[in-house]
Length: 159
Image 1 (cartoon, rainbow, N blue to C red):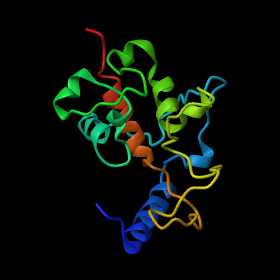
Image 2 (cartoon, one colour):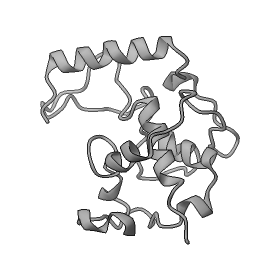
Image 3 (cartoon, rainbow, N blue to C red):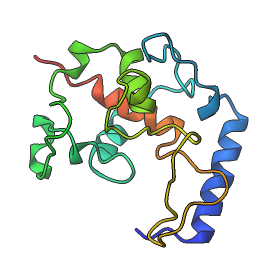
Protein backbone atom coordinates (compact mmCIF):
# COMPACT_ATOMS: atom_id res chain seq x y z
CA UNK A 1 0.00 0.00 0.00
CA UNK A 2 1.44 3.36 -1.01
CA UNK A 3 1.70 5.91 1.78
CA UNK A 4 0.53 9.36 0.81
CA UNK A 5 1.51 12.59 2.53
CA UNK A 6 -2.05 12.92 3.85
CA UNK A 7 -1.91 9.35 5.19
CA UNK A 8 1.38 10.01 6.93
CA UNK A 9 -0.02 13.19 8.52
CA UNK A 10 -3.15 11.32 9.64
CA UNK A 11 -1.00 8.54 11.12
CA UNK A 12 1.12 11.08 12.97
CA UNK A 13 -1.99 12.79 14.34
CA UNK A 14 -3.38 9.46 15.52
CA UNK A 15 -0.05 8.56 17.08
CA UNK A 16 0.07 11.90 18.89
CA UNK A 17 -3.46 11.35 20.20
CA UNK A 18 -2.56 7.82 21.30
CA UNK A 19 0.48 9.06 23.20
CA UNK A 20 -1.78 11.45 25.11
CA UNK A 21 -3.42 8.40 26.74
CA UNK A 22 -1.50 5.84 28.79
CA UNK A 23 0.79 4.86 25.93
CA UNK A 24 4.52 5.01 26.59
CA UNK A 25 6.18 7.16 23.92
CA UNK A 26 9.23 5.63 22.18
CA UNK A 27 11.60 8.04 23.91
CA UNK A 28 10.14 7.20 27.34
CA UNK A 29 10.47 3.41 27.17
CA UNK A 30 12.30 2.00 30.19
CA UNK A 31 14.64 -0.86 29.32
CA UNK A 32 16.30 -2.86 32.08
CA UNK A 33 20.05 -3.48 32.09
CA UNK A 34 19.62 -6.40 29.66
CA UNK A 35 17.25 -4.66 27.24
CA UNK A 36 13.93 -6.06 28.49
CA UNK A 37 10.81 -3.92 28.99
CA UNK A 38 8.87 -5.08 32.05
CA UNK A 39 5.74 -2.96 31.68
CA UNK A 40 3.28 -2.96 28.83
CA UNK A 41 3.66 -0.03 26.47
CA UNK A 42 -0.11 0.51 26.42
CA UNK A 43 -1.63 -1.09 29.50
CA UNK A 44 -3.84 -3.03 27.07
CA UNK A 45 -3.29 -6.74 26.45
CA UNK A 46 -1.93 -7.63 23.04
CA UNK A 47 -4.23 -9.04 20.35
CA UNK A 48 -2.82 -12.42 19.31
CA UNK A 49 -4.68 -12.44 15.97
CA UNK A 50 -3.37 -9.01 14.99
CA UNK A 51 0.10 -10.01 16.15
CA UNK A 52 -0.04 -13.00 13.81
CA UNK A 53 -1.04 -10.70 10.92
CA UNK A 54 1.85 -8.35 11.70
CA UNK A 55 4.26 -11.30 11.50
CA UNK A 56 3.60 -11.38 7.74
CA UNK A 57 2.30 -7.98 6.72
CA UNK A 58 3.00 -4.32 7.09
CA UNK A 59 5.89 -2.90 9.04
CA UNK A 60 6.23 -6.05 11.15
CA UNK A 61 6.92 -8.65 8.45
CA UNK A 62 8.87 -10.79 10.93
CA UNK A 63 8.90 -13.81 8.63
CA UNK A 64 11.04 -11.93 6.14
CA UNK A 65 13.93 -12.75 8.50
CA UNK A 66 12.56 -15.47 10.82
CA UNK A 67 10.97 -18.86 10.18
CA UNK A 68 7.82 -19.87 12.09
CA UNK A 69 6.51 -23.38 11.48
CA UNK A 70 2.98 -22.37 12.49
CA UNK A 71 3.01 -19.84 9.62
CA UNK A 72 4.68 -22.09 7.01
CA UNK A 73 1.67 -21.81 4.68
CA UNK A 74 2.67 -18.17 4.11
CA UNK A 75 5.94 -19.20 2.48
CA UNK A 76 9.21 -17.35 1.91
CA UNK A 77 10.42 -17.36 5.51
CA UNK A 78 13.79 -15.79 6.12
CA UNK A 79 16.90 -17.38 7.53
CA UNK A 80 18.73 -14.28 8.78
CA UNK A 81 17.18 -14.36 12.26
CA UNK A 82 16.67 -17.36 14.52
CA UNK A 83 13.71 -19.72 14.18
CA UNK A 84 10.86 -18.42 16.34
CA UNK A 85 9.35 -21.81 17.19
CA UNK A 86 9.44 -22.13 20.99
CA UNK A 87 10.46 -18.48 21.48
CA UNK A 88 8.05 -18.18 24.44
CA UNK A 89 9.98 -20.95 26.21
CA UNK A 90 13.33 -19.18 25.66
CA UNK A 91 12.40 -15.61 26.52
CA UNK A 92 10.11 -13.86 28.98
CA UNK A 93 7.35 -11.50 27.86
CA UNK A 94 9.50 -8.57 29.05
CA UNK A 95 12.46 -9.86 27.00
CA UNK A 96 10.32 -10.27 23.87
CA UNK A 97 8.82 -6.78 24.32
CA UNK A 98 12.35 -5.35 24.51
CA UNK A 99 13.52 -7.34 21.48
CA UNK A 100 10.57 -6.26 19.34
CA UNK A 101 10.73 -2.63 20.47
CA UNK A 102 14.49 -2.24 20.05
CA UNK A 103 16.57 -5.41 19.74
CA UNK A 104 19.75 -3.33 19.69
CA UNK A 105 19.31 -2.71 23.42
CA UNK A 106 19.75 -6.45 24.04
CA UNK A 107 21.88 -7.50 21.08
CA UNK A 108 24.41 -4.84 20.15
CA UNK A 109 25.07 -4.90 16.41
CA UNK A 110 21.99 -6.96 15.49
CA UNK A 111 20.52 -6.53 12.02
CA UNK A 112 16.99 -6.57 13.45
CA UNK A 113 15.20 -3.25 12.99
CA UNK A 114 14.14 -1.20 15.99
CA UNK A 115 10.36 -1.31 15.65
CA UNK A 116 9.53 1.21 18.42
CA UNK A 117 12.16 3.90 18.06
CA UNK A 118 11.98 7.40 16.59
CA UNK A 119 15.45 8.90 17.11
CA UNK A 120 19.12 8.02 16.82
CA UNK A 121 19.06 6.88 13.22
CA UNK A 122 22.09 7.45 11.02
CA UNK A 123 20.25 8.48 7.86
CA UNK A 124 16.75 7.15 7.25
CA UNK A 125 15.41 7.70 3.76
CA UNK A 126 12.23 9.42 2.66
CA UNK A 127 10.39 6.50 1.05
CA UNK A 128 11.94 5.88 -2.38
CA UNK A 129 12.96 9.46 -3.16
CA UNK A 130 16.69 9.06 -2.51
CA UNK A 131 16.51 11.93 -0.02
CA UNK A 132 16.91 11.92 3.74
CA UNK A 133 13.75 11.96 5.84
CA UNK A 134 12.77 15.31 7.29
CA UNK A 135 11.13 16.03 10.63
CA UNK A 136 10.17 13.55 13.30
CA UNK A 137 9.94 9.90 12.34
CA UNK A 138 7.12 7.60 13.37
CA UNK A 139 8.01 4.20 14.83
CA UNK A 140 7.67 1.21 12.49
CA UNK A 141 5.08 -0.31 14.84
CA UNK A 142 2.72 1.45 17.23
CA UNK A 143 2.94 0.65 20.93
CA UNK A 144 -0.18 -1.53 20.60
CA UNK A 145 1.26 -3.36 17.60
CA UNK A 146 4.37 -4.16 19.66
CA UNK A 147 2.07 -5.59 22.34
CA UNK A 148 0.16 -7.56 19.67
CA UNK A 149 3.35 -9.10 18.24
CA UNK A 150 4.55 -9.98 21.74
CA UNK A 151 1.16 -11.59 22.52
CA UNK A 152 1.49 -13.75 19.40
CA UNK A 153 5.12 -14.64 20.16
CA UNK A 154 4.05 -15.75 23.65
CA UNK A 155 1.89 -18.45 21.99
CA UNK A 156 4.93 -20.01 20.28
CA UNK A 157 5.87 -22.74 22.75
CA UNK A 158 7.75 -25.98 22.10
CA UNK A 159 4.78 -28.20 22.94
